[in-house]
Amino acid sequence: MAIPPLQKQLAEKQIEYFCKTKIPKEVQNEIQLKYSVRGNSFTLMESRPKWNDDSEWIDMKIAKMTFDSKSMKWKLYWSNQHQEFFSYDGLEPKTEIKELLKEIDEDPACIFWG
Image 1 (tube, rainbow, N blue to C red):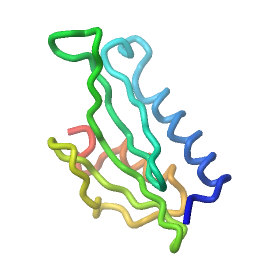
Image 2 (image 1 turned 120 degrees about the horizontal axis):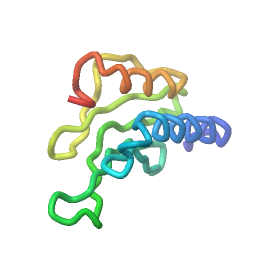
Image 3 (image 1 turned 90 degrees about the horizontal axis):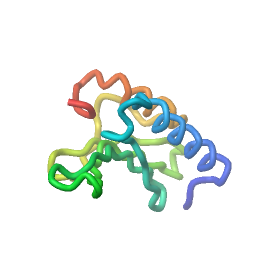
Image 4 (image 1 turned 90 degrees about the vertical axis):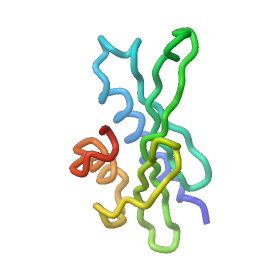
């Protein structure tokens, strides 16, 4: 079952706001945050210019937030250096995606931002 439309719209607005406000404007030509949506998942990515060609940008996956329609909760996943996702055990699934974004932002395990 898909994410209920209102809940998906709210989640997307919260992720957009997170991406726009996390990186200071004065360095957004060097680093940006963006996201993609696929099915019931939002993937948060860090984007930087390629080291030898700054006209090309490279995306690195940071986290994935997946909605479980059975429990009606969001589950958080982290990405390793090979961009493979693993369940994040530091936070139980939450009804609000903003709680997952807060965990990513604060990064108490130093797993999302290093």
